[in-house]
Image (cartoon, rainbow, N blue to C red; front, side, top):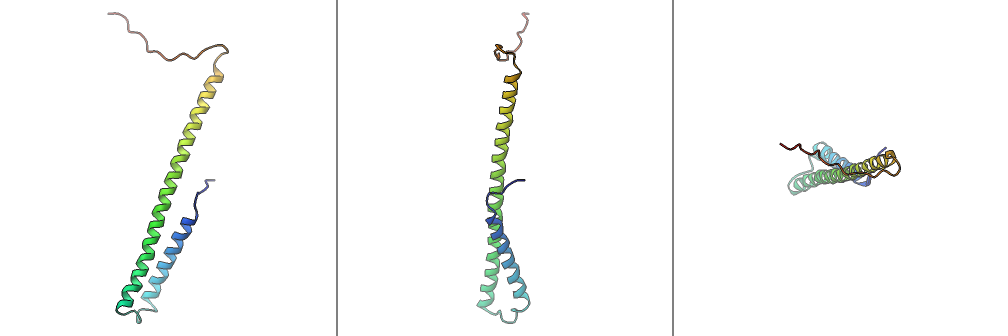
Length: 109
């Protein structure tokens, strides 16, 4: 099971989404008669800022997840190459040296 390096980012993103959704519902139902003038602008600006914060934290979460995945891929590749090298070393006969691969010589014309 994969482990995630920083789950707090997801919780903050969820919190911002819940706050933005709650403000949206309140603003469109119960607070609609009260929101007039600058109070209207400030209220909806606050709601928009929570939505933007949710987007920013989701983007940061995506970047961290990609960075973590890239590091895991690199580690798996290194582990696989090391395993192949160890297997090749074990399969050689004792006293036999590994020779570098040389291309076949071309016959003279």
